[in-house]
Length: 366
Image (cartoon, rainbow, N blue to C red):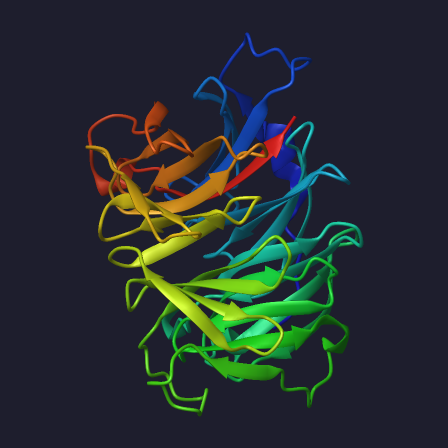
């Protein structure tokens, strides 16, 4: 599919809209970016004061762009967002929130991870969407992008549908990707992007799935991947089985699993590898699992409906949780799992046409 660029004329129309006149930009604070998939915006949140401080427009096509996921490069002061309907990845300035560049990679770009030192961005894909003109083979691709120039450096066809969950090793040498449909995950050597005959090493999420990763058994439905701080363990949220499964990154062996709730979605692990946090989409809660003893604490709230994204602050003291069908953002104490603040996003009467649908969450200390 031919690569295209978004014309950046919309900047003149005011891509950055401030929602607060009294925010002190000189004072250090924790900032979160939250994609609002239903309104084609990205919310900017002051986490410390549980306040919406700005909205960034990501509305480029008439039928909706659906911004889905954000990653932040604190070193080069940039942030990136995937637009799952229009097929773009966009780059913004972290200080001004101005749109700087974009690249078209095709339908349904999903999650991302970034090699910040080398400015290399990796992008996964959603499931095939024939109604959007998406070929099934296209949904098997993972993209490697030069984030400085916003050009594609290469792709890897993992051979399995919907390589959705994605996690990069700390040294940038290995990209872990899990198929949402085939119940397999893959270890991709990042130097081999662009090799047409390269097939990354694959591993099964469970002994009850086929060895053949071209078969969409739809058993585990892997959603997101996170690595432990030392990179020795890979955490996989399995929305099909209500588990987070943990694997040894040295050999792909299964280590253990935790039952977390119905349809676990996005996950986060504390910096000391003590706590696992899981949003459970159909249980309408967030579960904290103590990885030292398996003990669990749960956060829920009246308006917490289909929780989606979760991110820890840099000091691991707070969680930012998005409620995709409740149109609420929650700030939660990461130790006690008690709410410390909330931000209502719904405008007007409740209804699908008015929903912002907050999804992906990324946090930065400013």
